[in-house]
Image 1 (cartoon, rainbow, N blue to C red):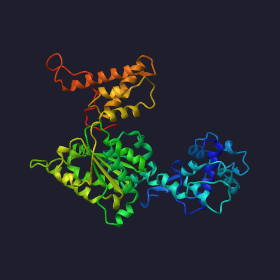
Image 2 (image 1 turned 90 degrees about the vertical axis):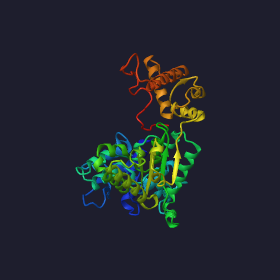
Image 3 (image 1 turned 180 degrees about the vertical axis):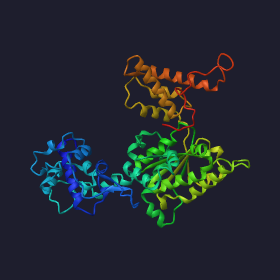
Image 4 (image 1 turned 30 degrees about the vertical axis):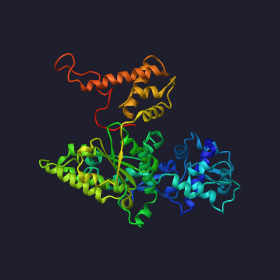
Amino acid sequence: MSDPAEDVVELLVTVHRYNEDRDLDADDLPPRYRRVFWTESSGDGAEPGGVERPLHVTESTAKTATGVERPWEAISDLLFTERKEFSGEVSLSQSGMGVEWLLDRVDDDDLLSNPVLAAIAEDPAVDHDAEFAVSHAEARDENRPVRADRVWIDALLGEYFDEEEDAEMLDLVTVKAPEEIEMTLQDLVLTTDQEGEIRKLMKAIEHREYLANIGLREIGKLLFVGPPGTGKTTAARALAHELGLPFVEVKLSMVTSQYLGETAKNVEKTFEVAKRLAPCILFIDEFDSVAKTRKSDEHAALKRAVNTLLKSIDEVSLVRDEVLLISATNHPDQLDAAAWRRFDEIVNFPKPDHQMRSDILRVITRQMEIAKFDPDEVADRTEGLTGSDLRLVLREAVLEALTDERMEITQADIMDAVQDFEERDNLKNMDMIDGEGAEVVGDGGAGHDHSGHDHDH
């Protein structure tokens, strides 16, 4: 809906029904409303907070929830609305009339984004002439649950983890809410095998109870393998966005390098964070930094960390704990055989072939103005480059055009950027320039990402 009056009336109708119908819960409220009515926990440790009845709509909350600048002004001429001068509360004076007015103006997409509205529409006791094809159950499935909201995640972390005692641990773990992940699966160019594994995962999550009933609990532990920049991290994040799940990311190299003596405890706490936030995706990056081939002269603390990590992987379950575990490594040759056995699926992320490079370029440039763009020609010249590399090439072409005061880039700009990228990338293989000890200039972040971190594919 785009009409201000309809937006505000939808909020009032939703709040009225939610207050009266105790069969509805916070998952029935659209996320855009939950943020407004969220209350912090009382501190008793039972729950990290929530949406408590009765809800009250003021002009301030209506503005935040709907984006309408002057909410009361938008609906003041409607016969079924009222405003209390002292408190500023806005409500329905005649709820039946308000519901009928709204249902005459909404469509299936509106119901799909608001489970409360869908519940009203399918209620036989509600008198209206509109016909809809969306059920309340479908609308609930379409909206992410409250446990995936940023406010819920922050409240739970604050409830269960001591700010001082666990501060170091939480610094090493990044938790993203689905709403904070911009990349979607539609933005990715995946191989057939990668698409197949993602489809299987989505079905496994959908049918967790069935898998438990038939005794198939050892499922949902994946290892993403491939060079840096091939999309391992991005694919995992996009999956979290698609499924509406919190994304718990930990870089094991951070855990080991900063607090070696505490590594085993920190590994355990990483899995504890994920289980508290379940259902969620636990993504372990740089998996090889701890689960590497064990040697006789290895540090004792690191040995304990490896054993703790493998034990934690054994004990976590998608079916039982609702934690989908995805690990990623750029160096599969460094993994212990025992580590390989912990994963039920290995997903390969190779460098893109010609067709994939061409498709990736089309995705990257969707919103760019390019004169006579030929992605196949660019793909011909970029063999061996990853999706992350191609994004850097396009970035360079755009910036070069901007220096010429142009908002439109050309095919020539892109080909020049490819050549510049190749020249900068070649510098990493040179030990010195113009004599011993000379510094390599121009490779400080503008060229290939050699940090080992995985980015966009």
